[in-house]
Image 1 (cartoon, helix red, strand yellow):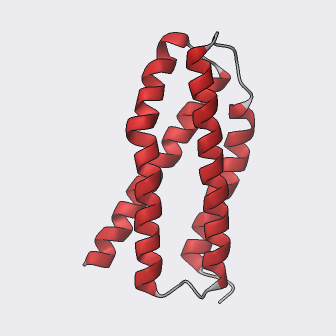
Image 2 (spheres, rainbow, N blue to C red):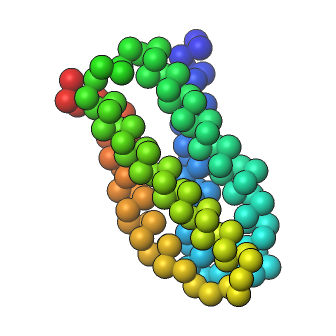
Length: 132
């Protein structure tokens, strides 16, 4: 039961995290200054904690499943680290966009294809658990 609840919480936190990143990326591409400050507050209050929860539940699941020796998990963690770095970059760009004139930022152009490719790779690795 604990494992199932942790898995559900992990998936929900991932949805919230990735959706928040997509909204930030799209908002940076087409900025509206009145929307940027509330979005920054949302990112700090919801998206970043969702990332932390996704990491926490994911590590719990990996420990519980005994997957740390598995090569697929190492690759998945690498992809999640890259995704976390992209989240940090988007958060920084959002912070700068709220402090300066609101001009388009190319973040949306590179996050959407790269971020979604990373998420796809992460889902495939977690679901199929190849390389075992």
